[in-house]
Image (cartoon, rainbow, N blue to C red; front, side, top):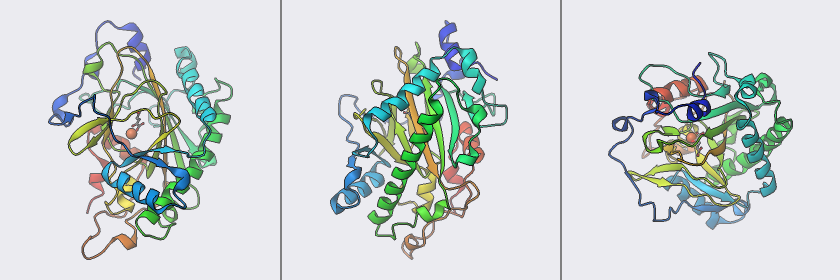
Length: 340
Ligand SMILES: O=C(O)CCC(=O)C(=O)O
Ligand SMILES: [Fe+2]
């Protein structure tokens, strides 16, 4: 097992080779949009999605053009989001020995740790993370759940229930925005959602221009709900051949579709490629909630989206986490393996 990035950051005076980005492998021809020009990632009022056709159109164009949006008026109290941020920071700022009680095991993707290493060439991400299954409840592996802070489990369970409800609202709205029956995406979920939480901790890095917090990737979820750090930005999204910074919008959740939504929508909704830059002075903590169908469920493009003009683009697939992770660490995209 590697040392955690937190310890490496605290103890080394030279950047270990394994973290140095290989720019020729990561979309090197892509420009970064001028940092001074504001990024117009659409802001969607979730409370209007059930009643307003214009908000629904805005949602559709946000997902088609950006693959993501900033969700406001989503019904989760700002004070509760602060609690989620608080337990995350409390955990990551515990002594290393305490955090290691939740350490990922050799062949498991869940737990506390850094990248799973599949090859010597793999460039490592400048991040430590805690990855846990939150729903369905009977799939929680409590040995990976922190006992400290003491209210961690209670807060995460409550957050999971709230995100599950919002996921239903978003999935129904996405279906209606395409003039489809509103349950057509939800029906592919099976009887319960699968919800994975990833708590991301990016320590400050003196060599911030040489590393990435997360390499370019798209998410393996159907929908991802990201709670950004309150103060420190870092997420960038790829659009029209340029990287755009995703600003912090107070009390918003940043929502993006993942590979499974790209498949279910037969490619109309594109799972956006994104990456994370790290900060030279400040730590950054984010919480990503990945919502997706049950593991054993096959997913496929919705019938209504397959026409003579728009042939079926993806096979029936079961999108396992292991399949996704292997592709990520090899720098390939799982979604490409799902294309017909
Ligand atoms: O930390 C972030 O801003 C993004 C995290 C992310 O992309 C992920 O966990 O998949
Ligand atoms: Fe992501």
